[in-house]
View 1 (cartoon, rainbow, N blue to C red):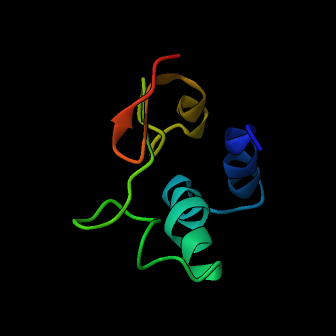
View 2: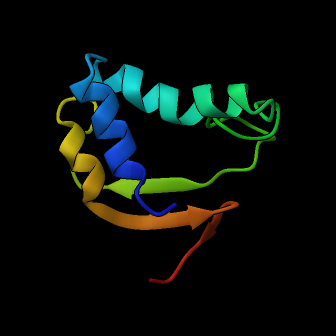
View 3: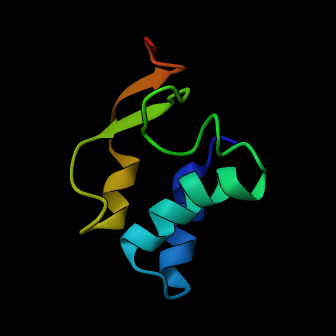
Amino acid sequence: MGQFHYKVEAHVAAGMSQMEAIVAATSGAARSCMVDRKVGSFEADKQADVLVVDGDPSEDITAIRNIAEVFKAGQFVRR
């Protein structure tokens, strides 16, 4: 827990594209836990935990480390 970026970066190091790694860590993980009807993708009527990052992790996966804001269950989290 708390090391999300290491897991995503490891997927890229293993050969996935940045987007494949992001999808695997979000909607793919929710699907494998059978909770994808409630979480795992940014859609209406789903609970949203969102990381806003500075940069574009679809181009440079290390940008996922640059967390600007966090929203848990749709609510802003003060850090």
